[in-house]
Image (cartoon, rainbow, N blue to C red):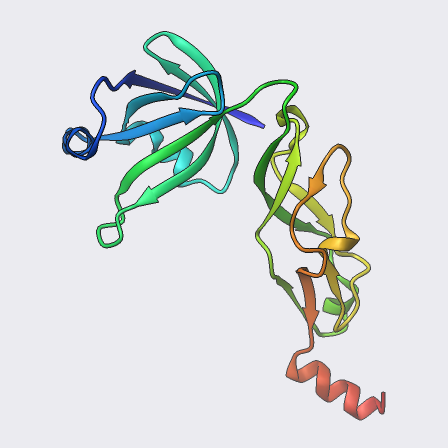
Length: 191
């Protein structure tokens, strides 16, 4: 996983009023939990833009007033109307403790069903996995070369080294769907 450097400043005051004043100064209130103690801090809104609006996943190297901690982005709260960021939660990570994280899925290869006139459809963009953070890849690559017309790849058929996939085993990750042209060709050939 890539590392994202982020500087923050501790927040001495907590509560709604304090959080509102933090947001009015173009900053975002944040919380770091999962370690020995919970840390409340704030970051500049411009500093987190590339972390949040990216399909990639990162280990966030937090520097809160000189104290350095590795973490992952756990949750973001957006304003329901303005779509601005209201709050960010970070989870401290350790070498020996597994974490749960959503990892992007990337389909590779040309499916057999596409060659026969079908259309490849990616049903899931991310999969939820549990592993040590050093074992989590930047993306999960799934080969679709053997995927025939009208066939699917389900979560239960996938396995990756040092990862446990937490999604339901019957969820469909990718499918080759029949198009009208493929249905017509099948009807003419009498299959």
